Length: 384
Image 1 (cartoon, rainbow, N blue to C red):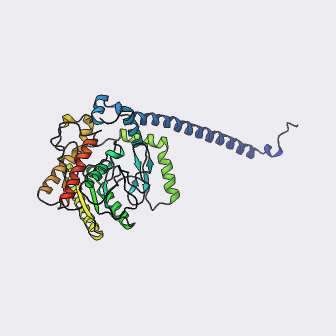
Image 2: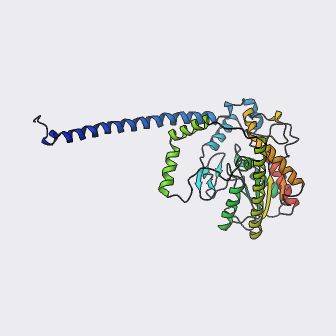
Image 3: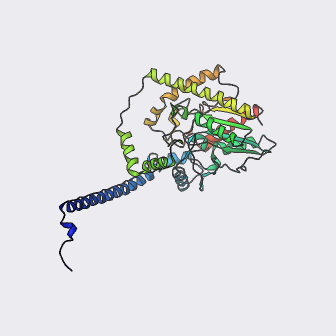
């Protein structure tokens, strides 16, 4: 074989182009390798961080966890918490996101959007039953509790004791939901023909963590499918997630003044009352009985010396709650929240033990107590 170069390679411009091509190809290949290796390493680091983060023993001793989980072994408790964390939410039109359908040992979410309770009723709801839809955030969903220990599950038991007809409670609580999303979700269900007899809304906690109506930076429905998919893929990359975590870590934030806290809390309370009126109008049109429940939060009328699972930093996150709850209390006493409103914020006032499984989610015992309070109100108001 001859070593004579191909005649075209004698062209200096062509040789220069080939050198550029080879250099660019090597640079691109090395960049892709670095990108892939970097994402793999960051993925491993995130998996390790996630495993540590979702292990409750990381921050709190076993003796404290044994108090709030008396019915679960440490192995079952940690398995249940992993099921909670290993269910990333999915995009949903109008409400931005929803719980992902899931079938586990402790956590089960229907493809129709509700978390299953003990002795769950049929779907679609049977009109011969007393059908109750419950709405709220992670506290209604029953975060860090098994299916049979959620507020909705206990509420079904409580209402069944007072009803001659079978009672079916459907738990539409979604992690991080607040009144804006709950109102939209109710409207969606009704528009699809799923009508409850009673609609219960558990609010308060997330209202003051969603100070503006921007619930989550999910891709909006008016984007093209390709754009939304691309944004989702890029957003899920380990490098993107790590960069976001670093940015949040170093982002400075100015503490709001007391005047700003008060003004913001008043805005949230006014917004909630507007949603109340909207939901009432919808329920009236569809012959649904609404019940608005204002829920307990750890920093309102609760002796925090009994709280075993809350850090000092977490206590500082309730500055808007403290002002807003006091204002809601005043409005409730003046009768401004309506006859279908149930004030349950001080239900923990006389508790002498820990009623939270983490910073803000209720234990099974307290979930039952809250469910009984809601059930009693439904019975006394003749809703059954």
